Length: 115
Image (tube, rainbow, N blue to C red):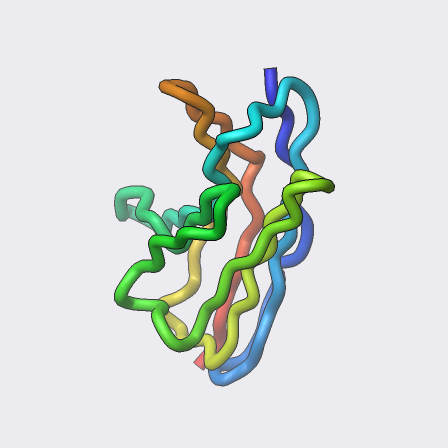
């Protein structure tokens, strides 16, 4: 089992910045993927940004140039730095790790961007 604990999030005005952090514990595989998804009200959960242990990334077009992802493989942490936030970025953000065929999720943290 893997546990994911998120921190960060909150309320920010449009154009502002926030940072989300996630720490994984438990049975961590060496070749995992860690990252972030988000779900806005009445919308499906969508990928925001993910990163492999080797540093390869997949970042949603909607946040490219504004959000960046980083990770510390030794500490099993992943961070999402969000800048130039827009009201449409408002959502619950979930930390995720994929290990083989198994997905693990954090409890989610609310990000609200006011206009």
